[in-house]
Amino acid sequence: MSEIVVFHSAYGLRPSVLDFAETLRGDAHTVHTPDLYDGAVFDTLEEAVAERDEVGIGGLIERASAAVKGLPAELAYAGFSMGCGPAQLLAQTRPGARGAFLMHGALPSQALGAPWPADVPIEVHGMEGDALFDVEAARRLTSEAAEGTLHLYPGEAHLFADAGLPDYDQAAAALLRERALAFFTHI
Image (cartoon, rainbow, N blue to C red; front, side, top):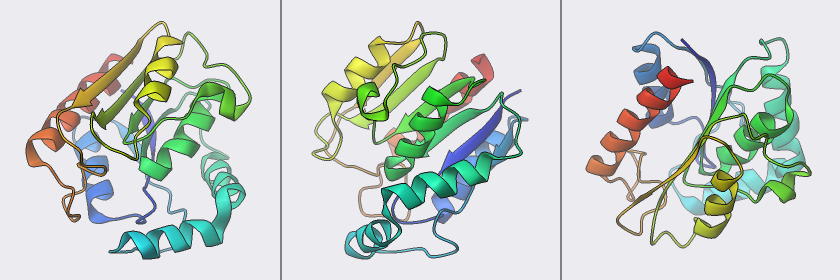
């Protein structure tokens, strides 16, 4: 089974992220859920973005890197929205990465200073009409991997897998969880 690090969205380490991790643990995976906000959790986008901006991208990367220090190199990474940045960066640049499962976001590989490693499987999940989700960046990123898949869901919601937010879509979230279990079992 896989050892996985799951990074939360700008809203913080919310119950839905912990529930996702428990789903993976229930399938015999080892899962780590680092808290990049030191316990702060937010209910509004404005509060979440303010915290993200206060910590800064550099601070988030430092915290994510510190969270995996001491863990085995052979990790898989997952991220929700903002958490896709550290998940993708570590999967793309940290030796030993086994895969990446990105939900609600993806960056062009060039933005992280290195090409996507062709032998590292990746799946990206987002809604086709989500204005915050760069479908073309996700398409390009997944095309760089020998095992890269972009899953587009019908709709316009961003964080459709977080049951505590207005964008929640139960059917899409259930399908995403099924696909996550299949992905992490496969790698």
